[in-house]
Length: 204
Image (tube, rainbow, N blue to C red):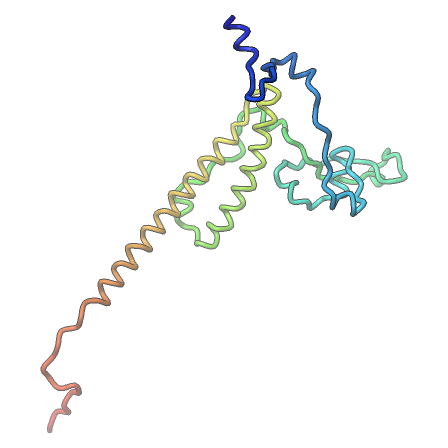
């Protein structure tokens, strides 16, 4: 009875809905792929593979969510047997070999290093780290989907963002303290002097 209750339940409309398992999920109908109307009206062909994506949309914003791997492909109309018949394309790839091994080529930014940066450099570095973290997040999800291990670089980017927020918070607190001190200095009135406004020229 408990097993049957675990695998099925009745909805508010009274129809019986079965809780899907892995086998049931594989047999369930899949929704059709929907294409935006603007895509259809423009008549843009849908890329069939990552190589065609890199050729048609090399600067697409979604490409920033993937790591780019150089790949030599034959030019149009050639077989690509010789070097002058091949082009190098940066093909998007979710997982690379570096994601499945320990990371020794880079490290996270340290707080003392970030303190020497200007505010403009910190602003630019924040977006660079965000783009890199998006790429690593894509790799991380792909690795989890394939039940793989690794992705040690994700920890380094997380530490860099943590140190970045620490330094930015230091500057924010320093700015607040300076503003409060400036208000206190403006509220204090200078002491009145009973003397003359201008100095008297000494008499000979």
